Every structure is written in C-alpha cells, then in structure tokens.
Image (cartoon, rainbow, N blue to C red):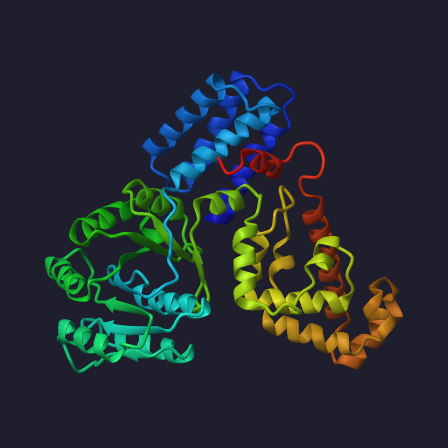
Amino acid sequence: MLDKLSTSLKDAVKKLAGKTVIDRASVEELVKELQRALIQADVNVKLVMNLSQAIKTRSLDEEPLKGMSVREHVLRIVYQELVKLMGPVTTVPLQSQKILMAGLQGSGKTTTTAKLARYFQKKGLKVGVICADTYRPGAYTQISTLCERINVPCFGDPKNPDAIQLVKEGLNSLKSAEVIIIDTQGRHALEESLIDEIIELNILTKADHRWLVIDAALGQQAREQAERFHAAVNIDGVLITKMDGTAKGGGALSAVAATGSGIVFIGQGETVDDIERFDPDGFISRLLGMGDLKALVERAEESLKPDDVNVQAMLAGKFTLRDMYKQLEALNKMGPLKQIISMLPLGNVELPSEAVDVTSTKMGKYRIIMDSMNNAELDDPTLISGSRIQRIARGSGSHPEEVRELLKHYKMMKKMLKGVKGAGQGGFSLQKIMKRMGGA
C-alpha cells in the first residue's frame, strides 16, 4: 500500500513541478491526481473530497509566503493538508507507566505487545509484560516465548481463567518494572463481555495509557472499532499492524485519525523490532520522497555504535567495497533495509527492488566473495574485470554471475548515495520548502 501510494503522490507532485505556469487548471489537475491516489489507498471518499477542497481553496486564495514561488506555495499546502489527514501527534513518554492493550482477536495484539516491550527496552527502560488473555489457547505460550527472546519478564498462568486475578498477581510480581504492558484477550467481534472486561481491567490497573491494536486490512471499518473501544475506556492511542501487507492501510490510518484517537505506532513486519513510532509529518514526508531524518537518527541511536557506520562517507557517495559491506551491516542492525532507505531524502530517485533486497544470507555470500579479492580490488572495484571475476569466483567457490551481482549492487549503492547527496540541490526542492516552512 505505502509503495503504491508513495509512487502516486510523487508522480502528482512531479507533474506540478514540471509545469511552467501554475494556474487554476494546474491546481485542479493536481487535485484529481491526489484524489485518485488516496481513493485507491482506501481513504474515505468524503475525507478525500474535503482535503481536495481545502487544497484548491487555499492554493487559489492564500498568498504565498515571502520569497516562495506559486509552485512551492501549492506543494506546501498539499503537504500540510496530507499531514492534517493523518490526525494529531501522540507523544510516547519514556517514563514509568502502565499500558493496557485492547483489540480484537487476529489484530496482532500479542505480537505488538512484544514489539512494544522491545521498543521501551531499547529506550533503556525496565519492562514487564502481563498475559491477561485467558480466552485464546496458546496466548501465554506465544507472548512468553517472544518475551524470553528479548529477555523481558512475562507473568501469566494458562491454567487460570480469571483475567482480573491474573493481572492483580502480575502487578504485584512486576513491581520493579518501570513499564508494564498488559496483553488482554480479544474476540472475533465487539462482544459485550470483551468490553466489560476491558473496563474492569482499566479500573483495576489505573492504566496510564489504553492503546488499541487494529489490523490495517480493516481499512475504513477500523473507525467503528476505535469508536467503540474509545467510548468504553477512553482510548488514547492506536497501533496499526500489518501495514506492509494490505491495500487498505490508507483507509485504516485516516479512519482512526478521524476519530481523534492519535496513532502512536505502525507495524510493518514479523520481528520484534518491526515497529515504528508514527509521526504524521515524517510519514507524509516519506511518502513524498522527502525522507524522515528524525526517524532515521532515532533508529540509528537505538541500534548502532559510533564506529558502526561513516555517515560522511555514505553521503559523499565515494566508498569502497569494504565501506559498502560495513554500511550494509550497520543498516541491517537498524531494521529492514527498505524501511531505512525510505527515511533518506531521495526525492524522485527510484531504486530498483534488488538494490534494497539484501538479506543476511546474501550479505554472508558477499563477504565470502570479498575475502577472495585482494586489497587493491577492495579499494578500487573498477579494477575487477573478466579474468579477475573468474579468479574471485574460483577462490570463493561461487559462480562468476554472483561476483557480477555483488559488483552490480555496489554500483547501485554508490549511485543511490549520490542521489541522496544531490536530491534537492539547485532548482525545485521539496526539502527546501519544508525548511522554509519552519515546521508550519
């Protein structure tokens, strides 16, 4: 969903950027492109029409900021209105707190609980989890196994059907934890018994936060869930899961935002590290190809040591095969390469999928191939031609095509990093617009 929506939005912006004159017809054409992209992403038609009208009215009625061209003025408005569509910014304090997790069965609530535990753990807080899901067979086994992998204590008893008693005992057992996350039971529908239990647990725990987990595949139907749970326990944050596997993600994001319940996290993968703080500004910035350097810095601070990666070398685009491997290793620690690349301000630079599809298995093979290269080749890959490829392949027990694949990937990485350095330099630049906006 995000890839398709991002491509559509960038194409719409690119068309406007290429026009010599920005008039009413240009604005209306842009609005139609945006409408098409958002409706395909399952955003509610009424919300899309409201956004369209706001963009049209503001673009034609408001005066551009001092020193800003009409083109930049219109794109600034597009950015602001898209951010507004995503709802309010919800803060996640890094302090002692109790978080009550709510959601229907199948929403990914248990996995998300473990991801949250990992998030707070990486922030330096002592975390504990309570399994209060006494309805689903295997719930305790699942959450306790996930918690064990990340060394987070998990309290539960699969033989005890009394969720209230379990939580009482869990709170007592985890007194030393700074952050306590309570994973509650889900059902297949919004049953009264589910709502009643959540209300009782909320009163018992005196939860600082009540967060709702919603499957992105629900699309616009997510609004009904958010409203019902909000009425029961005053939901103050929503986590949207499985954003990487559905075409309805835009519908879920906008539907939840429309309820006034801020989105706090989005999940886009299977591992405990695949969770990301949701920031409307950063989210829209990435969709438009402007990157999200704030999120990138946060991810790097959590995952890397100071000497893991040379940022200056990355942005200079002048690096050797040694540098490439070290940087790929560092980026791999930060999460899926595709997510990290999306945080870089690439503008309209489109990367082939093979440039970001670097698995740990492939990296291991690259290392073996590079071990068969001499120092001169590692420092200057342009030396590697036909006969050298044959020699390197024999020495590493690989096929010449695999050596060529490594060299091809190296060239793509180098080109990509030059694109990062050059994105927005001279002429029209969305990043320049954002700097001049001052966060407005």
